[in-house]
Length: 330
Length: 250
Image (cartoon, rainbow over all chains, first blue to last red; front, side, top):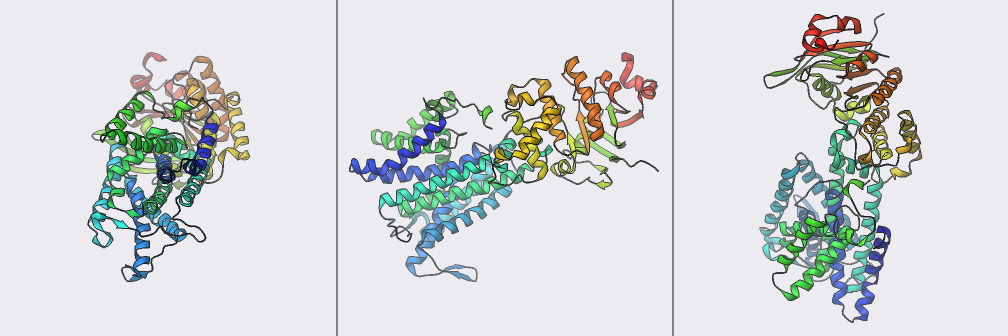
């Protein structure tokens, strides 16, 4: 048992040292595996902003994850083919430069989140869940039926996209790129949670009437948070596409949305570092149980069932002293 | 010269199906006054407060705040304009600390609530102002307590301080004495007497002792219509009011 701050610090130190463990164990796969954990953690932190702190159960966050992946894949595809991207009468060159790809990903994810959020936030509860799922499914089926970019078979990237002076094909370098993005995401979300937007979001989750009666428009608060959440998840999708050098409709599927949600719930919905632990345990369980049985998801389901029944605050609540109660989130 | 009302309600109507909750209501609220609204349950008092504060859209009629027609403004816009309200059932952010409820309302008032970067907890101006407001309602010693741990009376006080934080032009208090013990009610009465100098109060209250102790003017609603308006003496002697509401209470 330790304080939350100490646990958070240990998580970051542990992740930082992963390539060293990988080197000591002479197994570079560990670094690649942890790159996946870090990327899913970023997506989870993005979702947790609206799910844990805003009470918005988005069951379609794979749409942003997938969009990030496809933006990355499509830009790289056109760069490699020397074919411009045509949108109506405009033509754009592809690129393999990650800095540009990330900027494009953030812009496109934000625009999509604005669009989806604008319509979805007119609803609440189960309708919100269904409408976010519907948007994600629309893009999922669209990607399947778009032969230019591989359709159902997906799109392969021959090489990872580039950052000047760095070898992104090196698993350790790529891991640290993901790690830096994780740190940036944590800092950003921490700022948001302590900001006027953050406390308005937490208050809107609990009591919209009170929020409105002090001059705050909860819909605007939720929409801005939804956009930020979508952008973060989109960025994670971009990293995921580069990690695998492959993007396919699978990352737009409802199963992907479920996976991101599960790791958030598993780690601890109301804590900033919860999704990191969630991603860690999810991937480790997948690897460990997957090695024992084909039906590893059955056992994962069983673990989640136990958690929902007996430890709603997630794995983090087992490891820290200051037991979390949703009523103490401010 | 005729006094200009801070709040003017002009032929306000609201129906729920066949039930007329408010029927062409006219009402004024003037500076330095406490105007109490009384009537049996279901007479349309809370519906009126919801319409004034923008939580419910009227079917017809106009609402003016300092001569500005606010009938189509959103609830949050009206709050920022200075319509400060409390709710029939205490409505505060239970998972926040007391002081954070005030930080929330202060930044809502100032309109910078979409800012994603400034640390609200480090804003000294808000902290100082929040303590000043808590001081008015005698809650300073509970500033860092979780609201969920407060007593009902303290939650009521917090609601009053939240209303005060909005630079109010008028207060709408919906049964603020409900559930309070005698001592707390008396403290609340003293507080309201001080508050009315800051901004007039439209008070909905069932506790007639409090109403008569506070109100400069009393209006009586029945089935959504105004059946009488006047001072304590006039209301007490009104036979229709006796019949539909006061009965043998007085």
